[in-house]
Length: 282
Length: 282
Image 1 (cartoon, chains in turn green, blue):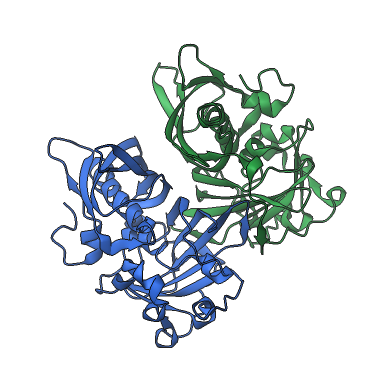
Image 2 (cartoon, rainbow over the protein chains, first blue to last red):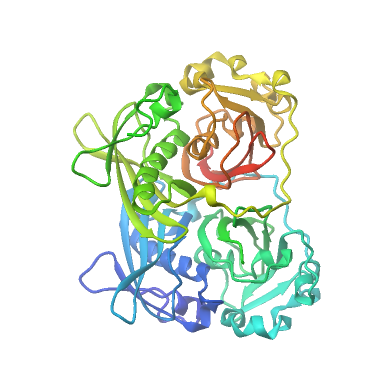
């Protein structure tokens, strides 16, 4: 029953309750406060499935942290009850693998799958200390010089409840689109923390990689970009404080685009890398 | 029974035969000619699962091409018989989603899962023609100035049967490791085609992204780098001819590294992007 007694919006939004008498079935409630565009935010759903997997694989194998997690998005989730079904695929010494399905019951009583997940879990607290990274943290102006999403177009905010739960400050160089002047570079970056002060952890990173406006805004494409697939590699337990997030795309083609994301913590460590394949807005 | 009558080594290596009376069970034979290090090459296994999914989702939904495919590697595959179990997760108008498991029976008669796959399939031949890519093809010396893997260290060749099935020509700038002088940059690139002249197609790209030597060689780490997870986005049907392949890593940390791969076809089109999470050699 992780998170159910917590005051954090994120922990409440991703709380799962094991269904009595089962080992791998969990109940959850999708809160409309995590809505964006036509459905519940895909990163929040991944974190929710990630939490159910963490409960399941943490208990079964001592592997509570997502190391790699891949979500395939099947249909748009709505606010209301949801069910998670989790299976152990394999337990190992350093990694265990699990699958998860997120389902909702439609008005006419059918069970519809929203998201299917495969993931490898481990224990990031035991991680090898060797770090040889050539990746460089993004150069961002100080938080106070970045642009709060309160300044986003009202029509965008109206369909983006979840922005109220974030303290998101975008690099002025990557918000030309808000003034009708997208850079065309395909890059959006900024500072992120949860509005209620809840510090980042590995599950929160699964949400953070999908929390910024779609990178297509910077290409002048303002429609909805449904995610086909999102894979996140959690590379370290993040330190407390602001996260820096960079979204970029290099190849919009054939009706799809990739959206790459890096998340850096307050100690300049690259804590998560993700890539998603999304549908180009019409 | 795709590929069984073909003369191509790749099509024989990824041939699947539907088991009579079943809809989603296929038999296959893992050929030792696709071995590398301690097992069968991970890209070949992904292509094999990809072919079973192609048969299954092509027939069920008219979606024969992988658009996004994620493989989680569970245990090292051995040469010999293998079984594929494929399920339809969802069929849609433009994309269908499926899962696949690759299993082998051990000497003591246990069925062991080698690979679990989730994938979204579609029809790349119907792809939208809009291309806005900022990605640039790699600058490679001409094929004849690149280094054939016949020049690789004999001890490496001895455990890399699959190199005989490739015509792989590496950029001299990224093979310093072969002379004991890795660049440290974390980049290996070169030209690739199948040795028997079989032209690339979407399934072959699933193999191509994992066919080069591990990018860790360029960091001076020469051990085996088992793949935890590999996701491939096939972005276009490749044109006939040589492929150009770039492998790079930016973050070796915590005992894992990511290996990014781009595949460019002979018309300068970015036809596949992939990322894998692999275990750092000890």
